[in-house]
Image (cartoon, rainbow, N blue to C red; front, top):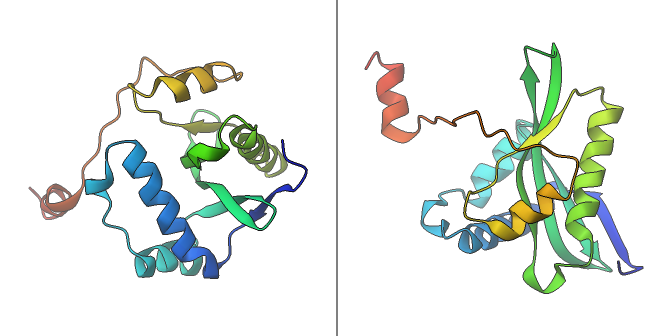
Length: 161
């Protein structure tokens, strides 16, 4: 790991950078067409409404990655957990330990806040990430299926549909 590597909490002025990282990650995941977030939406939901927090990884002054996370709640544990929505390190900086450093920081945040767990999703085709996560003391949740209602379907459901 580079001696100039550091991790800091994002500030509102980082909103354009956060959006750029989201788009880079989505492009890697072949999901760029699904990104509808813009700077105003991110600014509102992350910094004004406190919907998530973001860690920025830097090599010297250069931002090289990020982790976006928020609190969820486990009824089984009876306490909050941290959910990692996005973990991204730019391709030219992978293999330097920066992704692991971001995960360790998140684990430290979870422990310091008394959270019961840290969890995330990973696309089933993303073998490099799967290999990375399997090297951790993390366990895949293979007996769970993720469901989502979004867009017009969410509106329809809310209106009794």
